[in-house]
Length: 320
Image (cartoon, rainbow, N blue to C red; front, side, top):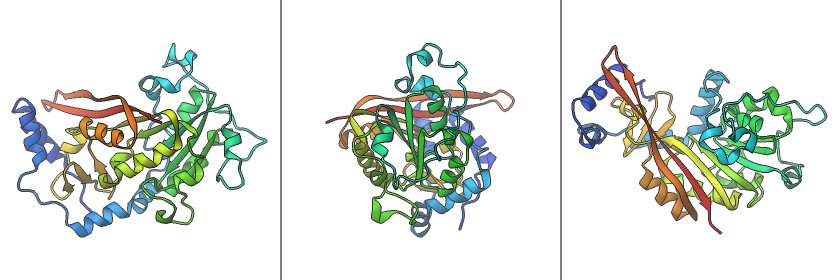
């Protein structure tokens, strides 16, 4: 059983219903999904535990052409940028140079990673996909070293094949960040704590990754990443907010309960509230510096529809 893609008709109906009323009541009525049944438990478990297969299929099909480079990170997460970029965040930056005398890093085995990280600002990107976040960050900040992991070995392989990966400033590896060594889905996967030295990262980025993980595992992910961060290090978060257009467009047959859904390709999609996100990070030893909704309305004048986009953005500092 694979859920069918959500038809555009469902989007239109949801937006028309939202536009016909005012205030939060209309949104809550839509999200309550009254009369709709959740996906059967057997299939829910399959979607929640077979993420690697679904994401491998996604990246095998889309390769490196689906996502755009996340240049907006220079402005949204200025903490990662040097002064010269902060003064002009949209300035052009050159691609990374290949390091001809050094083989690209494909494993932490036999590598003195602490020596590699010495004197560098270290960013750990979780859910790195094919590098559309970490590579632009490395281009803009020459002192950054990137540690990058993803559940999908296909995605990691595509990242490693990029010319810019040969700069010697990034180590990408497959990992299920929700689990330790005994819970990894394949022999090539490594628990993040077995690769990243304890308390070595200055930053962890979580860009649209927690939404792809069963919410029941969110706190254990946050706790595991806390161990990778230095005391005072920052977790930088951006993901889908509750009430986003992507949530409203799901047709019957995609709802797993609460604010969790399954896409037509079998991957999960969770939607966040600032309250729950604050609660989860605080419970796992973080101080909340920022946690807010970012909203944008896209107007389709031809159809007479206003389409809400909602994201949650947060900055969380590791306590001692």
